[in-house]
Image 1 (cartoon, rainbow, N blue to C red):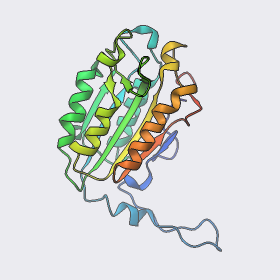
Image 2: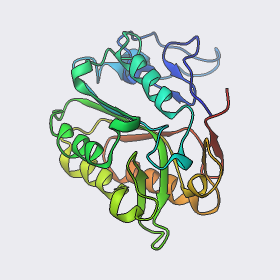
Image 3: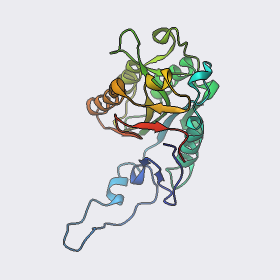
Length: 239
């Protein structure tokens, strides 16, 4: 699945930002005269209108190990960056965003983003994390999960990839805020062992999505939006 900007400026195919980041609140509405009114976008937005917005945006299509290469992950990240820096997408300040794509998305750079950059947001701020890349369990110890960075060595996943637990630690212990949105298209090693150009989720791939779901549930104020269900394939060749 490849994201694109739809006619709705707040919708990034597969994910929907709506009033969490939009500076333009809308009115109350009901989908039928017989039903009660839903909470307004304006009421939801009021929690965010006076806060700063921060983001980490990671998209990796080009890996040092070329067999893992994807087609659209970096472009998805760039489009997401354009979206959130636009007025209708939230008006994030460029200096409040760590954008890491392809060669820049190394293990050390992503670690710095989560360990150091995320110290900056205050308790009242909103933080968005966007991940479009491979994810994988350790081939030898499957309970240990990793984000596959640009410079990950296929012969040493545990020594060169980014442990998912570091992302958990950063969100739970480094961040002060309790307003976090995770946009995830990080799937597992079925894509690494198999076809080029896909982020596939097969058999034990549920580990990655389950980990992220558990993270969102155990971290106060955290919402997870994933592009694929645990038993689906995320295909970067699709239009």
